[in-house]
Length: 249
Ligand code: PGA
Image (cartoon, rainbow, N blue to C red; front, top):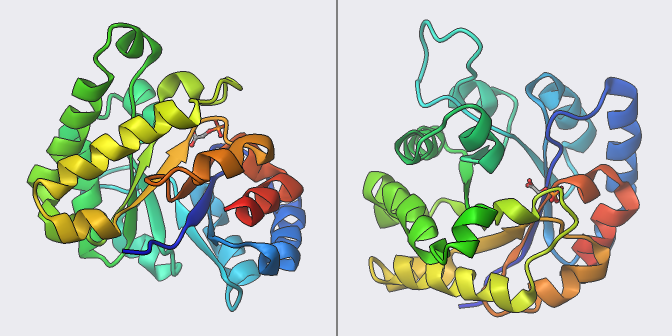
């Protein structure tokens, strides 16, 4: 099955209204040169700005997290329906920074993916091993555990409405990229694991690579058979770099 590629930016906790506007304007102006579908996942306060800048353009927008709860006394949380109110298409869930700094468990990540899907958002579900886990030769076990928690919660039907991102923690923001072979190996493992549940869903599943993807390595990474795009941190803050990655897809 031919899968379209997706290049999604994860702005993390960067930006201000003026800088965002410059970046969004440049992305809008260059979007036609992208071979991939493009999206930006911005901090919550800037969703309205992203919507007004990007509505009617080919670039989608989304958030970097979402609550597992539909509504209620959950101070500081943002629900999937609120994100839909701002016409988000995507919500990242389970980013390694949320897992590491906010204690998000596999079970919570799966519940967030479920909440996103139930509101019509597409969760970008992040999985990936730390350096210690890679060096301990448990990459496959870790990624499988993270993925299985999601599969048992949302099933193949949920995965059909999701995107998965493989982000080796040791490659995030470090300038150390997984080699195309290292990344492909894990992407193939993810696809095979999903195929064991539903081959059709596995064949259509977009699996993004994230971790120091940049214009100089994007083409080689995205040329791998199971790499369907990128989740881009640092390079998504530089319009020319982000657009170049889209053009390399
Ligand atoms: P990076 O971040 O591209 O800056 O390594 C990727 C991510 O954390 O999603």
